[in-house]
Image (tube, rainbow over all chains, first blue to last red; front, side):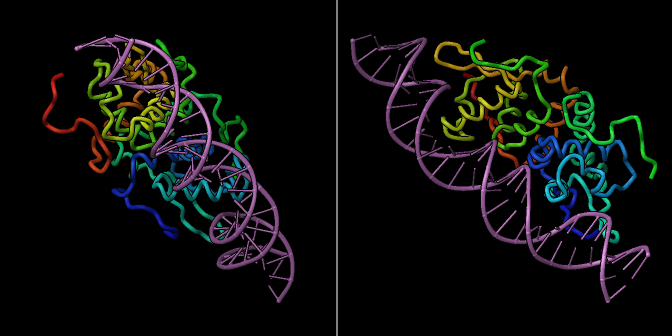
Length: 118
Length: 118
DNA sequence: CCAATTGTTCAATAACTTTTGAACTAAGGA
DNA sequence: TCCTTAGTTCAAAAGTTATTGAACAATTGG
């Protein structure tokens, strides 16, 4: 681990809700959930926002305890903290993601049929 | 019904999450959930915020589709829109409320053992 | 009618959040 | 070493949300 992350018990419900209440961040979390287990780097999300702005949103997600960012070379590998979130707030993440998946008006990443392998 | 409320299908996930991401509003929703079926007036929440500020937060909850406010005499009877929320975002409200109930650091209303009957 | 109760609205301010661009760091490849 | 890639940091600007007090409206009880 490289950057400051809260421990599981430091994760705060209102902060998590507020952080997920932003469409850009919700899109990031949705994509992470779909690709669970596969660590992703920031470039995956460049169609949601500028590089600088993404850095800001990804920091918010990390600081809230929603994601984990690990520095590997010049990349950040980002994963969902599903284990910790499920322990802390059972069912919350699943219901949020299911609700987001059901809403076609929300911004999304990697939703097209075409999937780039590398 | 008196004041403008969104219809069930107009309720937006990011807006609901953002609205619930405020500790004062979360406390209001929690209390409404505990007293489900019993319409409450604003005075119940006066220990959370000033009258003016409550009016603001209750309007946010109403506009997001989380609560319903009905004008009855000089009071507003406030209820949770559980039916609509459950239809739109299954499991979300329950997991949020369960998570909030598990967090003793959050502000709360009517948590004491003493319950005033009238 | 008068006063009290219940809550809203308005304008101001304070406090945050989001977005931006330019400058930066750190790693990796040619 | 130099260049590129990946992402951060910083300061400024823009936008939004929260909080306040004073003034208001509507209903109800005396």
